[in-house]
Length: 205
Length: 205
DNA sequence: TGTACATCAGTGAACGCGCGTTCACTGATGTAC
DNA sequence: TGTACATCAGTGAACGCGCGTTCACTGATGTAC
Image (tube, rainbow over all chains, first blue to last red; front, side, top):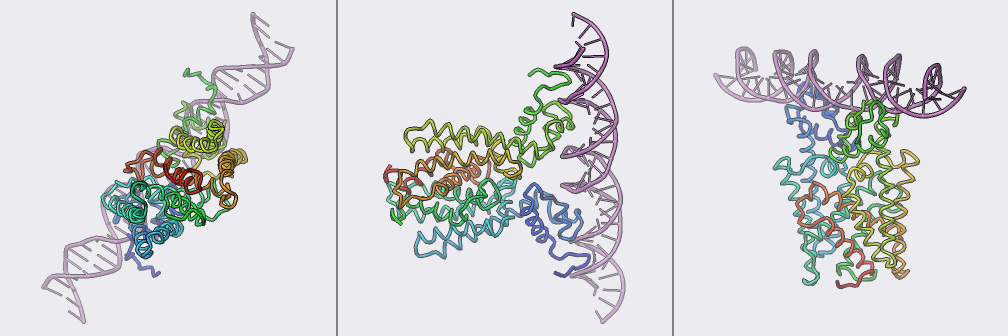
């Protein structure tokens, strides 16, 4: 990475990257605008050429996270065709993979104090991510007899909750750290049991 | 609450209370030792008569949380006897009730940066809470044929993950805020479907 | 190709702030006699 | 019951620190002619 002298060239994105690294390693608490600037090789004041301030920088990091997340989930889902079930399971794996590979984004999205409605752009990105997940749930629930079919948004919320819970409790250092199960196995088996409960998987396996 | 002049009387616990209120309203980030002291009507320096410092105060708040949590879960579980299923469902409700009624404790326990191994006392309290949940899962899974029975710790981890996910995503202001479902309903229906998947509930409801 | 000039990204010094922590102290409490 | 004294909870001033933000500035870039 060549230092380009007085002008940085792509400072805006470099600042987002620094912010993500800091958020990943120190939590949203530990993130400071000054340190992000220093990491990007720039004076804190330079940040104000590209962002309104500290919160605005975190918001942009979260927005990029939602965009990536929605893309990944969408891709995993589309790719699992033709079986709705296989597509759904790929979606679950993609969720966990995203949280693992992009912890900075994940934290900015779900654990920072940034409201999803802080900017229209952030709200739109978050809504798109939610819509993709709900669509997956809706498609899969076509296979449930209508009289036993839960609303797709309920279905989707359950899966999301379990996924998020696994990430927070077992894929990070935390109270459940000592768990003997890999997060991936935990989530996959949990979703499996849940889908069996909906009649989407055979009762024995 | 009488102001007792120079000596406070029960400053230690008053500081924990102030800390909990601050953590609840501003997050673990927003919590400062100085403001907790001010709320308790005392100089910041007075805190050091009772705690080693900022982290130590949060640790004590989390420890009290785990103790309360373990007691509540244990109580709810015992109260559901003799039916293992009823006991288990009461346990799930108790989880959510705890998170709702004691958000400061919940955040200190699960969302602060405090490691569960920071002190032996905290580790012990957390272990007890975990043990109670695992016991509930173990008792309930007695009703599953051995060849289809998952390890109690896996079972317990699934339930814990879903509960925590519901709390984080749907019982707080967050990305899922707009959800049309009450957290209680979300969790109860989710656990119901999961238990059906384990064969612990009849396939139709 | 060369010069003048507008643009604007980044500088660096400064600000006021609240933080966690330390220190020598003071004053209330309670116990010994 | 009264006095002397040890204990120790809380004071208040001070510290160094890093923070987010502002400001007038400077120097690199690119465009017009």
